[in-house]
Amino acid sequence: LPDESKHARLAMGVVPQLDNLDVELTCRQILTVFARLYRVPRGERPAAVDRALAIANLQPRADTIVRELSGGMRRRLLVARGLIHQPQLVLLDEPTVGLDPQVRQELWTLIDGLRAGGVTVLMSTHYIEEAERLADTVAVMSAGQIIARGTPAELIARHAGREVLEVYGPPDKLAALESRAREKGWQHRRSGPAVALLGAERLDGEAPEGVRRPANLEDAFVALTGQEIE
Image (cartoon, rainbow, N blue to C red):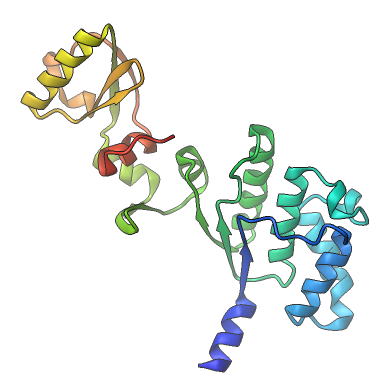
């Protein structure tokens, strides 16, 4: 219904993957324009702009034009733009794609702050460690379909076990281990120069020599989809 659609749009903020900022405007000008588009009352717009700038840690750059901002600052401005009207739900489309590790950490801190403030965050990401680090609930998609859903800990326990045993060696040794794993029905994956045996805690005395580590969400993802993370 039209009225419900209008209310839904006002309750949501959208942060696209594509940087579609007007490079000739300042941060403050962009946020002011979007405050008006999202129908923030005129008298409340300056405070809304200041609040969004503070959330994104952009107060020192409030009057800097976009073309002079770094990539990380522009990404934070996109987030601030999506939050200008204090939405209940924020949609983030791969917010950290292409960013260096330091800037990604800054975005993670920002997202943590949103969650702590009671904002529901729905985020798509190809970074498995990002999903494991930030998400309360993860939906794993393959070929456009959701194939598993749960907390990171639930998905790891269900599909990768508690421990992973990584066995290193020459190609013939690894090929033999993969053959043995198939015969025994052991869950395994080829991980670079190693074969990783999932659920290693269940192998008992049959486990070969290797390096044990805690299972993670990437192990569960590969077990579910058969696809390595690039």
